Each structure stands twice: as structure tokens, then as C-alpha cells.
Length: 156
Ligand SMILES: [Cu+2]
Image 1 (cartoon, rainbow, N blue to C red):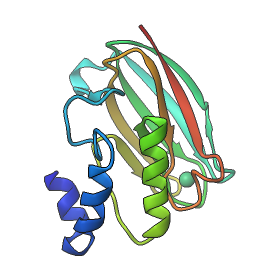
Image 2: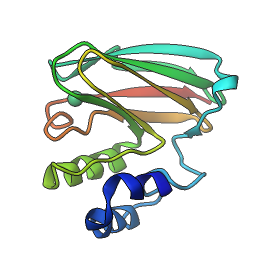
Image 3: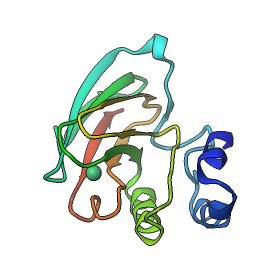
Image 4: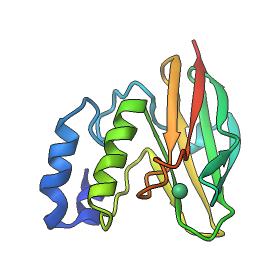
């Protein structure tokens, strides 16, 4: 929470408080998210490289992991635009994308995401604690809507 507040500044807090209160898990501050939790870099069992492209696609856009696995995502932005890699469930990502579209100047930084400047590489270490489907998406305004999303199947 501390990090988010610092990045957003006071002016944006009511917006985020509202968005966070609308669904369980808010913006990733609770420990018990259905899609997992921030992982320990020392316990990474696998690295998955994902390219984020200006054609609003991820390569690959379908990933399979095992429940309990800690994965390091290495996100390479191969384009000329900024991109993100945000983990979540379909509903929270959609809501979050709508919020980002309404407030395009809003900065966001949460433990479940990495933001990647053009030509740069970002990393995110995540532990998948439950079986099922986890989504990822780019929430730069317009990108999610253009289809910049993918899915992770977590085996039970
Ligand atoms: Cu993007």
C-alpha cells in the first residue's frame, strides 16, 4: 500500500480507494489473492520470457505453470510504446483497465505488475498458489481493449 500511495499522490487516492473497494483483492495489497502472491526471488523454479509488442500482443499469450511454482517473468518490450504486464483475474483486470482509461494520467505500481519502457526488460516474480486460470494484461489505456492480454493455466 505504501508504494502505491507514494506513486499516486494524494489527488488520486479517492479514485483508487473506490476501485479497490469494489472487488476482493483490490489492487494486490492483500495476501490471499486467488491468482497468487509476490514470489521470493530465491525460490524461482522457472523463468518465462514474454515479449510485449506494439501490435498489442504478448508472445507467448498462453502459459502453463504448476500450482505452487514460483515463476520469474522476464517481459521484453520490443516496441516503441510503453507496455505493462499485470497479473490478475479477468474481472479485476477489466475493471482496472476501465479505471486507467478514465484517468489516463494515473500512474500505477503494484506488486502484481511490471511496467516496461520501449526497448527495456522488466521482471516480475510470482508464486501461483491456486489452480485455475490467471490472466495477464497491459493496462496502458487502450491496450487491453485492443487485445493485449494472455492467460496462464495453473495446474492443480
Ligand atoms: Cu501495452
